[in-house]
Figure 1: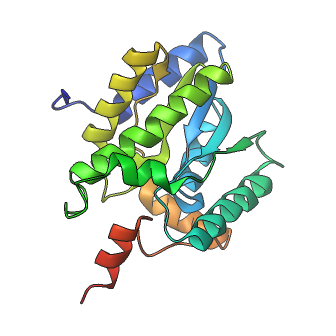
Figure 2: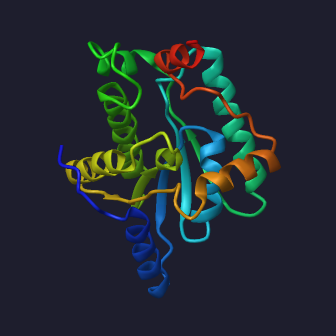
Length: 210
């Protein structure tokens, strides 16, 4: 997969928002969310410019009770925002086999490596499918807000899937403009559950290593 070098994805997003605003166009956006805390700043930021449907599709989450804890927290947060912004939530199916299938043979990879790349592809591919199904103009993900995630890689995957399905991918690097810092502030403000590992069993094991 080709990853473009020296692309400022925040500036690319700014250009799209400016163009749509100048044309009095409010697009429909399918936003894949990895968790409520990461979605907090992204929803605060983008809800001014898009009609947003959040997709919670994360078959990588382990164990099962952790998955449902996170999806319930996502729903609670969206409900608290609905007095300000009309945000919809779609809950994808929880099928961990999908994650283990795409990561087969990559179990010993380091965090941020090829295993994570396959996980990103799995979730962004599903986001694109939902975006088409719901008649959205764009799809994107909250994943780029994390300082631990490679924004170039994620955007490269998004663009690749965009070409595959013929739907616009919204570029992002949500950690810019103090996005990650703001997500921490909003998490405290809304008393959001913040997990101490990314989500999969491999990241959980890494988080507990001494």
